[in-house]
Image (cartoon, rainbow, N blue to C red):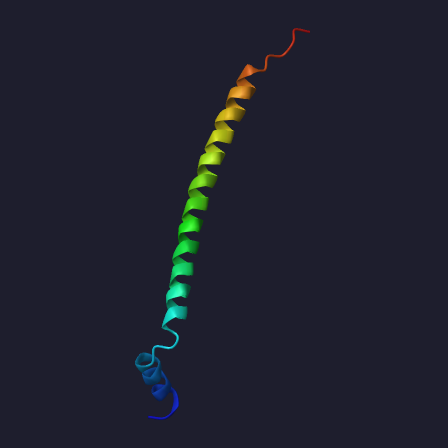
Length: 65
């Protein structure tokens, strides 16, 4: 086979780049897990900040004129 179809067949027959593909998939998985963790951490920090801000604003009492 020649051309593009032959190259695809060669990719499936040879295993020289298998480790690179595995490392690429592992990096993709770690990246997606990090992104999910980042979103969860950001939501938790945001909720804590809003709660802290609400509590601090509730403590303020204006002076009598």
